[in-house]
Amino acid sequence: MKIDRAGWPFIGGAFALALVVGGWAGGGWSLPFLLLTVLFLFFFRDPERHVPDRSGIVVSPADGRVLVAGAPEPGVAPPGEWQQVSIFLSPLDVHVNRLPVGGRITRVDFRPGRALPAYRPKAADVNERSEVWIDHDGQAVVARQIVGILARRVVCRAHEGDVVRTGDRFGVMKFGSRMDVFLPPAARLEVTVGQMVRGGETVIATL
Image (tube, rainbow, N blue to C red):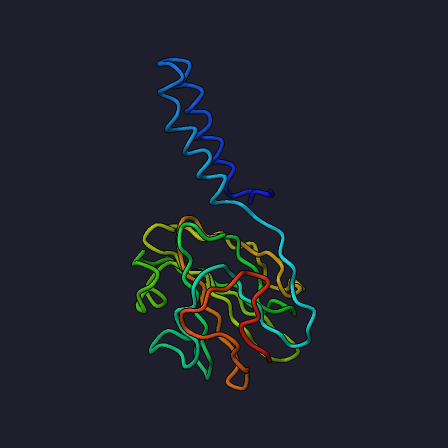
């Protein structure tokens, strides 16, 4: 299983503590740190995904449960007319994020903020987040990483000017969070509130 590189400081730190504590106090005392090492390995896992081969699709940028599918929440969307799909990630979900569409990245923004629980509507407006704008054949699609009460940092590896493919990895969120996707009004949504989705595989809309 591949591990996202953002996880190695946590994994290595927990394992080093296990070795130090085990050598100083005995093997039994190292067990909590060994368990923490395993938990970090699980959290930062990065499984391969098979992106559907269909024209005009928008795939889920993350694993999780759909919170919003339709009209955007008040005060949350970028300026203009959009549809919104929001996905809540629990600590058990894969936290590596994937680009919902291919095209050219035209803008990447980072905004510091708070760390409200990610399932609360206000979180999309006030929490720390990164925002990636993608030009897909002349249509703008926005993917927004949002921290939660446990996920205090987003890692965004997208850069303005990058040419990307649907389902490409572009970052990770640390420890429980939310992904919002903003789509043109004419997009046809293919998910419903409460549905479980898989990053890079579940089709959430068609452009």
